[in-house]
Amino acid sequence: MKEITWQDFEAVALRVGTVLTVEDFPEARQPAYKVTVDFGPEIGIRKTSARITDLYTKEELVGRQVVGVVNFPPKQIGPVRSEFLLTGFYREDGAVVIAVPERPVPNGAKLG
Image 1 (cartoon, rainbow, N blue to C red):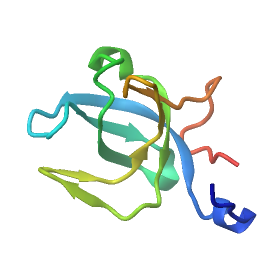
Image 2 (image 1 turned 90 degrees about the vertical axis):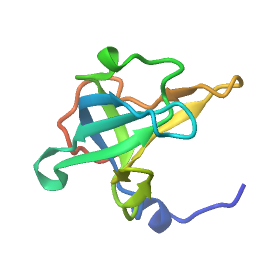
Image 3 (image 1 turned 180 degrees about the vertical axis):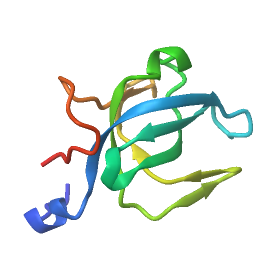
Image 4 (image 1 turned 30 degrees about the vertical axis):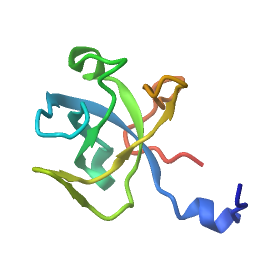
């Protein structure tokens, strides 16, 4: 594993946001959702696609806080313009467990 500097870590904007909407993404090559998250007044509302359909229903995701990388450049994924990376951990079976704060924090709070 490559070591990074504190400066490298500080360059990654990991922020907390609340899931506003979750939609099916039938055009995706692998099962995924279109996810819209409110990252607070500084960052605003951002959209992405996420392959989290194995463990989560759309209904249970709405209103949950999640952690996202908000300073990647936008990326076009089919018809979806991905504006952040929803973070999570891969299980051995390939399912993704999303990264979430242990307690509620303000939208836009920075991990650090």
